[in-house]
Image 1 (cartoon, protein in one colour):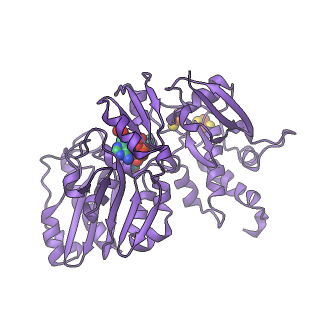
Image 2 (cartoon, chains in turn purple, brown):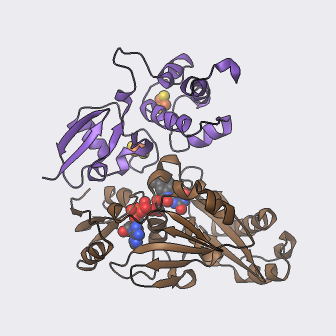
Image 3 (tube, protein in one colour):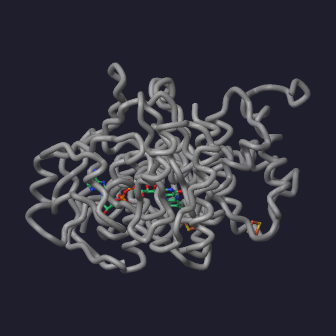
Amino acid sequence: MPQVTLTVNGKQHTVEVENRTLLVELLREKLGLTGTHVGCDTSQCGACVVHVDGVSAKSCTMLALQADGTSVLTIEGLAAADGALHPMQEMFREHHALQCGFCTPGMVMSAIDLVNSHPQGLTEKQIREGLEGNLCRCTGYHNIVKAIAAAWPLMHGRAAAAE
Amino acid sequence: MYDFAYQKPSSLADAVKALSADPEAKALAGGMTLIPVLKQRLNKPTVVVDLAKLGLVGVSVSGNTVTISGMTTHGAVAGDAGLKGKIPSLTELASHIGDEAVRHRGTIGGSLANNDPAADYPAAALALGATIKTDRRSIKADDFFQGMFATALEQGELITAVEFPAPEKGAYEKFRNPASRYAIVGVYVAKTAGRVRVAVTGAGQNGVFRHTAMEQALSANFAPDAIAGIATPPDGMNSDIHASAEYRAHLVGVMAKRAVARAY
Ligand SMILES: Cc1cc2nc3c(=O)[nH]c(=O)nc-3n(C[C@H](O)[C@H](O)[C@H](O)COP(=O)(O)OP(=O)(O)OC[C@H]3O[C@@H](n4cnc5c(N)ncnc54)[C@H](O)[C@@H]3O)c2cc1C
Ligand code: FES
Ligand code: FES
């Protein structure tokens, strides 16, 4: 069987896979990281978004073999060792940006990429456009947008009041 | 998904060889089309040949020509400052393909090779008069697209780069499907010295096409009014749950006028 060696949340793993194994299957079924969800069959919902080498990718639309040699970050890798939440997770909680929570891991991973890739600032329009690949059936998006806007200054080390 | 053999060659020659040896072999670029197709069991390749190690990545500008390597992602095209200076309508088009995560992996070569009748890049290639470079030859965009999901590529032939001459001005207007973000109708208008090309995607049953009546009118007078009276016949237009043939035909006119008005 083919083997994939990759780093997941800072830890290196070598895993036996089938050629057709998807990255999301490797994460959920081989590594037991079930925080990454599968919400569709059509690459459209974004519940499976993780970071591959620092940028968002739909792990349901990548072969595990394509992730060989990469560094993957999943929702489980965000909180600090002492359990302190990542600022984006904290803001999702504070702004009530989740209801059932199914879309949340993918939303949070896309949101972090969006904030990271916009060091100059992030408008509401950019946030809404940036979330086009993530579907939520519960919240109506408003509170997700608020949470991301609130996380931007925290992640870029600026006081919210300076905005 | 059916299982398949998998190869990740590190030279273009080896990739071409692997793909040419077996008519059921398939190239894998960003996988944003191929993997969904495999998941739905709509295709059953014997071998998947991953192009990731061929190094066909990057954008270069030389004089008035921009060359985009085949494996360059939509995100990299959208963010390329040199390209934006030459053909801003092309970086803008790339920035509206799918969503962020799709743009991080999907490639220009994969999009053109796939020739989805609702894809965006085929309109850019046809309107700008691009040349598609492969491992063995150069193909003019006018000869490349051969109907829905069909191209001039031979079995095993790989797109290595796409060359775009910069126009004086251009614009792409897409009326998009809000769920998939593909074009229900997209029109790319490009004006170069003395002539205008108009390419329409999303609308035609045979995929992307040039709108010659509009090209003639716009070559004489590059203004939205010049094409206000040109009706696009609904025969040969797609009709589906998203839009009827008549509606698509109407949208072609609306998108074309907007593109001319906004050309930059
Ligand atoms: C949710 C979603 C939304 C999307 N929205 C849009 C949109 O709005 N507009 C749009 O235009 N597209 C859209 N796409 C499609 C996307 O742009 C794909 O990236 C693109 O169509 C295929 O590129 P790829 O690199 O992913 O190719 P792959 O999926 O890897 O391959 C596609 C086909 O091309 C062949 N191929 C790949 N590379 C080469 C090459 N260099 N030479 C020869 N053959 C090759 C493969 O064998 C395969 O048959 C969307 C996709 C998804 C999943
Ligand atoms: S599960 Fe990956 S996009 Fe829906
Ligand atoms: S919180 Fe339920 S799908 Fe988004």
